[in-house]
Image (cartoon, rainbow, N blue to C red; front, side, top):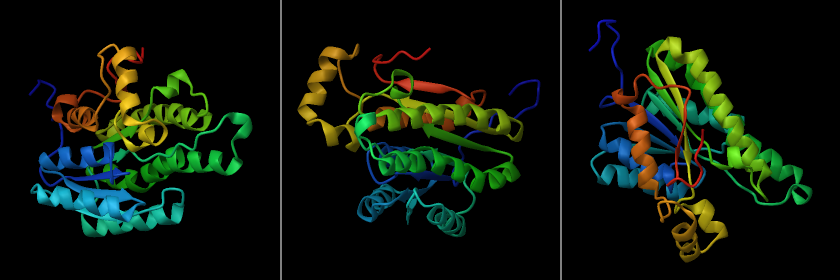
Length: 259
């Protein structure tokens, strides 16, 4: 393509993509969209029904997908799931660290158990996943990592310091991995989604209220959908994003304009 002779790499048919929290919401949308691009999808989730359903939908649409049960708060479970994934598919080309938890409470009311669970799932698990698969991806000389952050990483969150702190940390992990792995042909970026119709906001607010709030408070006048965010992931794994690493990309209808 260019006089430098460097291949502009992107997702190829048959590449393996791991999606944590692949059982629903963003995870299901990522799985279906990347499967449509020819990826083989390893769906990681703690919920067997949701994870298996995503795998079924991937296969129903002509793709190749498998479900792997994992407890992301448990390092041993992560190690076992990684081994099973590689045995079933192969080393991943792409990892999407999508899964997260959000026990809600003000700081003075938050239990240490909820604080520690949030850290384990939202930031320690992506760290352990990077340590596990990093050597394999480096050996391949190509790869993509996509981490899911949040606008709360820059805004903070009342009744959500635990969540906001981990999402700020995931942005820092993204930049650090990007610096360490760029020389190996591995790109690492973060998606910063806005409020969307996924299980987490729906657990706290009725759907009608989410739509009403977005209509008056979001510059684009609507809430986000998982398919919106999946479109950005499709770009980030493609050769069109071959010169992009270490970035946090917000997709939220203008609700939070990240510098």
